[in-house]
Length: 207
Image (cartoon, rainbow, N blue to C red; front, side):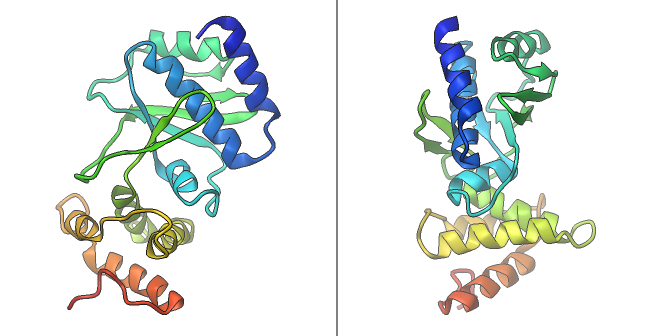
């Protein structure tokens, strides 16, 4: 992407008033620039849930990891984010009126694929919802009650239960039983709460 296209894209991102669309445009732009170096980025955490729920959950910033096992070279971080006029580094940035965290390798235990979202400067990857819901449930009670994480998990569960995104509930159950999480009872409870509110049967309900 040449300097003229980058400048035009940055102006577009900066001027965007819709928070979710603004994040999507920035994720798209960053992903395109890193792809030119042969690296794939993936949106994670609350930012990923914001995209999967189409803004029903608002993150407020943009968190991105990469799909390779090794860390991205610091010099590459500085060079690429410098093309965007970003301030900060080597992991935390201010760019186009947003905060962007460029973190380490993406941690995923799910066997499902990353989700891919179309955006103005090329599509970008989003973390698997099965990973996200189990992770947020864990964050909601360990260590100590975290209402923000719990509300986030409930929004994601609600969107999935209404079939607005695809969620592999068998995979959710498998992940919640892994040593890394060990939180199946808490996942079952949260999904049941949301299912009860929607007056449907929970897909995690034991038969």
